[in-house]
Length: 286
Length: 264
Image 1 (tube, rainbow over the protein chains, first blue to last red):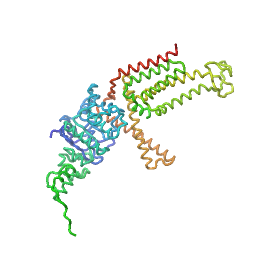
Image 2: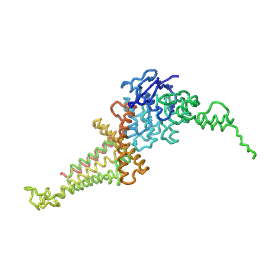
Image 3: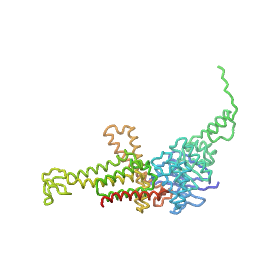
Image 4: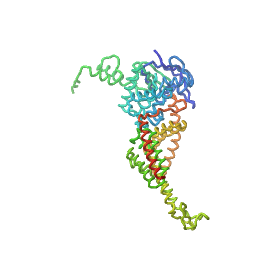
């Protein structure tokens, strides 16, 4: 696989002595959609912060395009230009009072001129559907809108890799759909995306690759269909099997659906059911 | 919070802050130049109407924001008009009014200093006009626009960064405080004075931790976006700024002319 980022046996110990990552390895394929799953405290956020260079490994190493991460001032600036991180809680990311100002923060730090920054800010806000909100106050926005401003703030830096820490948390269903559509558009443009989530059904349906974490390690990694079917690994990561897989297996066992590759979502299972010939239930004689 | 809400809702939000600042400066200059109480009162009315009608600042908001300084002004005027009965040998004869000087009494009681009326009227009028000019500016200009203007005027970056962060944190912490109070109320935290004091104390302690945590989180978020020691933001664009500045200068000049008439 053509890996854009690699973690090799990375370990991280926090100042209080607790362990964040232990012998953690991961490879992110270029231009693919990745989902990171794991129980609370599994180390998902710690892993994402390593990828963006916010945390440094106490053991092991990270590679970008085959080159070890450069933690010098210039190296970090270059890294963060290419690898953007969207935090889980927008209140902890947004520090300017106005939408346009906050989105411009990252591109200005890249040393771009004002006209380019302005164009990027406009494009990023349009991409997240907030084109008409540039001059609004951040504290007047809803939670979902703030989250989109956070994403725009990173998109405006035009990163090759977009990391999102639980982007669906706190969003209602329509907003989740909008965000999914946005991520699909970005993936179609070739952006490599890694998001952490607790929603196995979303991850299974959306991602090309799944990565399961437990105890500060990635315990399973690979194509979504293979990892989604690995019941033992899912169990070790505190996840249940994807609903679409379980439902499909059940319907195959009952002879309702033909055996074959399982659909990636419940909707796809329903679509498969709809094209089956209709068989009315026969009444059991009493 | 009222000021901030009014500024974002104002019809002049899209007007260049430099134009609004020029107009306000013109108003302040006119208030400084004018001497007659009538002219000063007229200036105050014109400036207040500009905010209320021109910028459509709600009257209720305007009055609510103006009340504290007006209260202070009233108190100051009363202080000038009432003088304690302390005799100052050689300054004035007790009971005899001296122009511009409060009439002191010898009996230790408070006295009404009628001679101070002209000075009080002038000071009150000037203060009102200054206040109206200032309110017209702050009630129509969101703080980020003001910060951008100060940046253009070469205010020290560190001061501006602090202002920007404090402004943002104000709303973040307000939200955190409200959420804390709601959570405590839901568990009967404010049932009676004793509980209320205890809950408030606990929350205040918790907020200190939150401030520290949020400051660390903001630092981390800034670093994730390439922060290198300076908060840099793109200032808002005001395409009509030149024309608006010209109008503001004209309006300010008219105010100054009207005020200068007092001195002729």
